[in-house]
Amino acid sequence: MLLMILQLMIVLLALWVGSRYGSLALGAISGIGLAILVFGFGLKPGSPPTDVIYIIIAAVTCAGIMQASGGMDWLIQIAERLLRKHPDRITFLAPLCTFFLTVLVGTGHVVYTLMPIICDIALKKGIRPERPCGVASIASQVGITCSPIAAAVVAFVSISNANGFDITIPQVLMVSIPACLCGLMAAATASYKRGLDLDKDPKFQARLQIPEQREYIYGSGATTLGKVIPVEAKRAVFIFLGALLVIVFFAIFQSVLPTYDTLRAVKGADPLVIGANTSFSADQLVKAGVHVDGMTEFFQKPLAMNLVIQIVMITAAALMIIFCKASPKKAVAGPVWQSGMVAVVAIYGIAWLADTYFSNYLGEMQTMLTEVVKEYPWSIALVFFLVSVLINSQGAVVVTMLPLAYSLDISGVVLLGVLPSVYGYFFIPNYPSDIAMVNFDRSGTTIIGKYLLNHSFMMPGLVCVITSTLVAYCLSMLFF
Image (tube, rainbow, N blue to C red; front, side, top):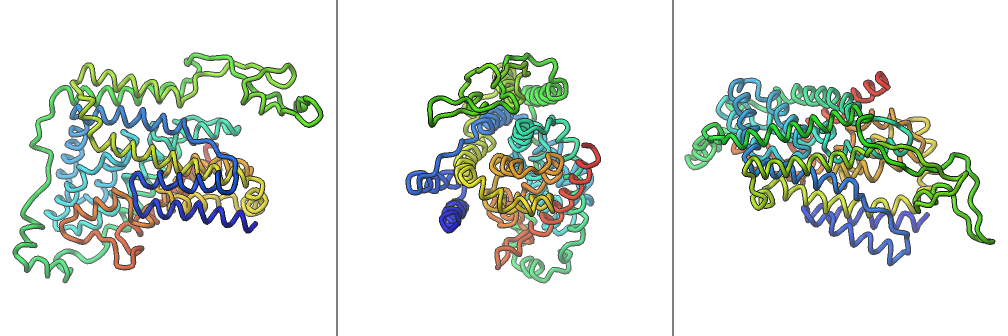
């Protein structure tokens, strides 16, 4: 037990140090923890999450090509028109815009251009910018569990299907989208009168007495409305949206996908004994690709959705390059592609480290947690949330913790219901979208507090995640 706790401390220390450096360091420093566990303690290495990584690469390549074509500018422009048309409702409309941008593109890093616009509209309307800014940053990450091409959603479906809970991407979205929208509207309502109005805020009024500060706050405005959007950019958006529709279509009508012979274990088959000390289970034979009559059997299985998403996304990216004048070099230099590749490295290191630890102590974990989750199966949501606080990736939380949850015999219906709880990295305000929002707010009302946890994203984040999880849990129980 002491050795198990010591190794857990190594895992947590690697994650903590990685989060302090941020960016690529989170995945790279996880590699140090992995090396200590494998070479220092002799643990058997787990499996890196290659399926999730491939999906992220395909999705961010497609989104990056769309950004290079100018398509992202058009989407931001549409969102800005909506926000400027209804500035008095910015606290509710801003999070809806950032949420749906993330749902469409599959990553929350597409909203940076919209952030200064949200701040500018709030200031000009006399609304405390902290109110829409805090919720909008939260919404940009909440949308990940609601996107058909996000790694968290696809990983949830793939792992669930492998563990006997047959569910499709549209069925997940049928729960997560309305649940997360309820959570966001609850957070926006809680933020509507948050803090002092600007004309009553002594700190803000004191800053206005300084001419340079007044000029900085009100002297410039952010907008994309004057930007001319070429027809190729709009064409790229339509190709991207078409790709999403194709993915959803195949997810609903999987019977139209090509099928292939696939090996599976025969339930209840006796082990294959070879010699005095060697035997193989049916599952081991399947992993090795070996067919033995009575232990394994072939069945027709449609093309896996993770491969469908990769094929469709890469094809859409190619079409945008050919027909929309999208520059691959510009895509690689863009923020969407670069942030996506950072996410790949982070998930690669984090999930591999965590899988190595949990796979070696699965029996002990089951012994310790089984009684608790049998009595309170929803408590797994707290585990998801706490892990997310550490590893800053919803996809990594799903890949790392969902197999453990299924091994504890938690129902797939329950796990779908607590899916929104995989977002907890707002708790410590070190995520790029939160830091960017603080920097874009020229009024200084969106803050990271003196005591670190008293920041502008804590209240809307907690309200959103708790509400979303409760609603998702009820919807999952109702639908499934």
